[in-house]
Length: 103
Image (cartoon, rainbow, N blue to C red; front, side, top):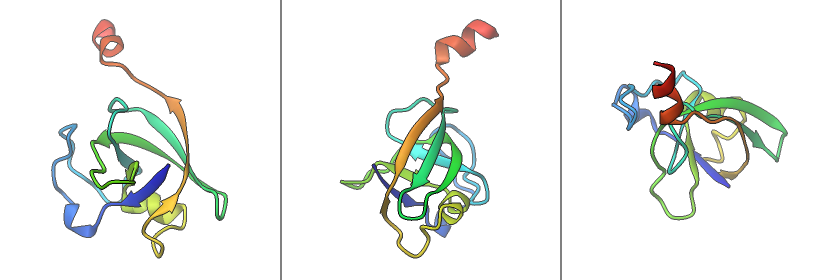
């Protein structure tokens, strides 16, 4: 998968989940995974990893699979590169039906 990260101009904007984007939170955008899914993102170039939570949709640029928050991108050392290949592991996937059943 290929990762990018949000630019500063998105700070405070509403995400597709309804949350406000916070560049200091460990979050990400993915096209299809349910909101609240936890992912382990690893930069294979330096083996640094971060756990992020899906709270937005995107990226919408061809050849890009996941948009990381600024904090997450910094944690795995990708700020200078901007776009890098990453390994993605799903740690927890939350489905709407499961959430509704619990309420």
